[in-house]
Length: 332
Ligand SMILES: NC(=O)C1=CN([C@@H]2O[C@H](COP(=O)(O)OP(=O)(O)OC[C@H]3O[C@@H](n4cnc5c(N)ncnc54)[C@H](OP(=O)(O)O)[C@@H]3O)[C@@H](O)[C@H]2O)C=CC1
Ligand SMILES: O=C(CO)COP(=O)(O)O
Image 1 (cartoon, rainbow, N blue to C red):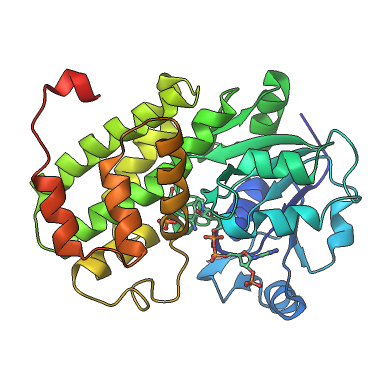
Image 2: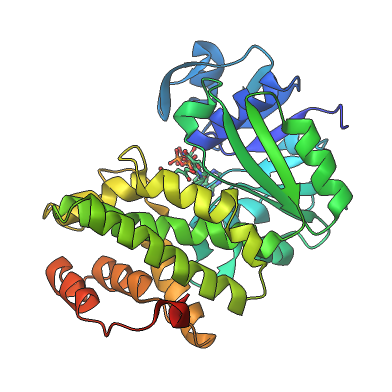
């Protein structure tokens, strides 16, 4: 097990929660914020007042804005929004020692390139070892030490096992695996499907409609994952089914809340309430990638069209409800 400090880049809600989780697992943690003022306030107040107010920071956490702190990292967690991952990774080039594991904690697909997060890190940090952490886990639960289970995947099985052992605790349980693609697909796609479920609830279509959306959403997620070479059993686990259950069922999810606001008729420009709704950025890239692989994803396509302002919520729902009924086994 690694004894060196854990370095976390990105001091938003998730970076802060992961810092507390790693500290509760017995590690010393350096949390790197990009804004020196934010870093200074957090370090002094021992709380992330901007993104996660009300949760005290563990004493084993040091907050800084100095990227120099990443140079000594034996393992680094990259916890910025998906669309900022390339820029953040680029800022680490020439700082990390070759072979340093970089654990990607963002859930999304880069929309300008349609690249998965592990591919972005592969391009920007070719000497690093990419790993992905995903699964059902609200920052506000994790930061308080409520029980959570997630999965960490790395192509090098021993690295996945070692990273999971380094960060795991009785209340933050990290399963490990090697299916990087499967774990990152689960995290990226569930955000798009959570928006769809939010829309259903915001429109007042009811719990039964939401359950149908989760099940049919899971079916399209499985089709996509299979076509991209991921293992189906990965998507039946924490990153995939587990995260769908959480984010499609709770207004605490920013993606669900964004969809719910759209369903209630809040304009697109205001629906996120200034919060990060990753699925809104990922939807178009997911659908484009699915198209290139000949995968049908009608729910994700509807979300992509709604967030692009190409179709109204009502028209998208009408189109979904009027799709031909087929044998279920043909479309799983
Ligand atoms: N919140 C949650 O419960 C969970 C979130 N995630 C995933 O984690 C990722 C981050 O989400 P979350 O922390 O919640 O988002 P937040 O909006 O809470 O915070 C985002 C953070 O990223 C920082 N940031 C943005 N761009 C850069 C950059 N180029 N370089 C360095 N830092 C940057 C922001 O800094 P600044 O304030 O200066 O803009 C901010 O501190 C997302 O992909 C999300 O899906 C995964 C699991 C749970
Ligand atoms: O990924 C998450 C929970 O697993 C957080 O979901 P939101 O980004 O929708 O808030």
